[in-house]
Image (cartoon, rainbow, N blue to C red; front, side):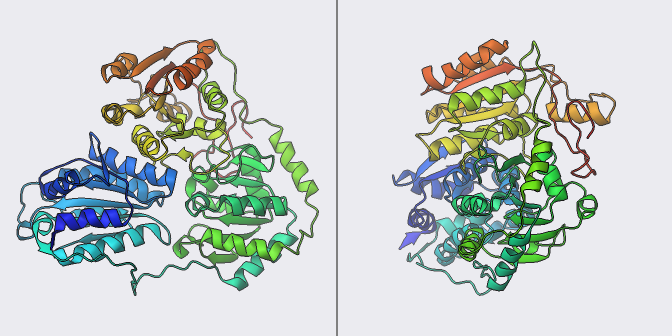
Length: 565
């Protein structure tokens, strides 16, 4: 006989969970007591529940494991919602265990009671409220299965305190079968054949891939497909690293801040192969503008609801990306593209010659320069976590990711504050790899208390704070579309980040000259390899992110640094 709390811990052990990120409270004290009694699972005490979920999320993104967070009822659960929604929007597999008031108190406005299931329903893949201790083992097995199968996502398991105290026999199921949930894995063979036939005849082809390639570990298959066909390829923000950025066939990121060559190739292609992506507004801009050019679209995705959601497609293929790509490669073994696409490549090279990522020189530190030097110093091998804003886009544009699961950022929800918790989760999951957190003076303050967590667990994260003393991306929009009315974007009461880092027991370095950027980065990554280093880099105040597709505009209506295309 075991208590519900013991069963919860045994379930996590059966799932080979190594780390649980959490914060204790009354409703989960039985579970925390059982955590204390064992040594197989390590608990990471964060300073805010939002950071617990973000860190668990990053562990999943950087290691392909299901992240686990543990929070208490009421404010513990509501604090976790931002992290849950962030993971949901980016399809990250998580299991979030939340405490709940005793079953007899539910609905009585008890202390620290909230309807966790109701609150999280819109931003989870599924959630459970367990009312019987005998249901814990089966429910936990279902939670991990649902989170990590089909289109991944977060699952919340809400457990009342009396259920964690009750006892029953423990038996963890080896397999789970759910009649109402059977995600398709293998794509329809007939549709895959149609897709291959279209690809072989294409004269202006483009391969467009998203986070689904990374989540399904299909980067090797994607690389083999691109090299087999010789087609140009572009990634979304979430797909970076799915194909080597240093390869000449890679056109750069596409979308709102994508390259000219990627966006115009997308706009003017005749056959588009979309893999593990969803044609969202930040990628294709105005759907009417995008659809104004005739093209054949092949769309591969594990989630049937994502296909033809925003753009009508010609060949839908529902299935796991890796499985579908494997079948495509088999069909291509004895076939070569029939069309000569050299003229198409010549046109693309003309767009590429615009050098749209070239930036102006300045006496001030240009943020783009910092990212270029970060790439050089780390040889492109670091895991880079970012917050959300201009620094995020510059990181995506100037850090060349050649392999997957080294780029951690909030794409769908755009959550400021994720950077440091992401770096914590990634550092724990990848102790032998350099981890950089690229952030801004606005974003870093949202979860800056996690410097304490990093100190407690001795995590040698390098924080690159591109400090422009503004909420940079909002300021850029205000400059371009609101006649420079900088409403509430000027950060006129910033802390001394160097002293703040030192107050938490870390190393702080301030950089104010361009010639000091590279030496400071080398000092952080080499001399202080085993320390957390906070680099407060004073960058050009009004540097903007270009290219840019304004809201409501199409991919062919990009604004460049020096001209309106």
